[in-house]
Image (cartoon, rainbow, N blue to C red; front, side):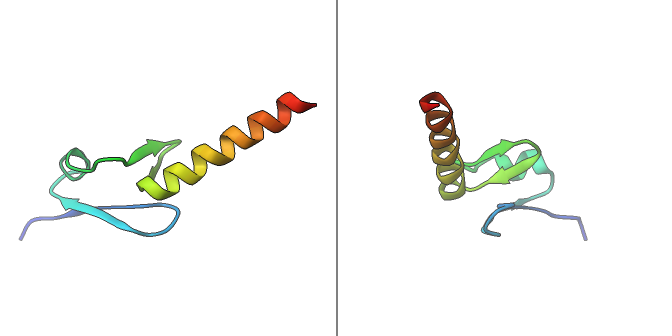
Length: 62
C-alpha cells in the first residue's frame, strides 16, 4: 500500500487531483495556483485576483 497525496483547494475544498507526491498531483492541474502556501482552484483564483484588483483600484482612488 502506497501513500497518496490529495491537492484540495484551500478556499472551497474542491478536490483537484491525487498523486504519489504533491508535485505529481499538481503536474496535471490546469488553472490552479499555489499562492502564499495555499492551493487555489481556478474559480477561487479568479475571485482572489478580482479582489486584489479591486483593492488596488480602491487604493489608487484615494
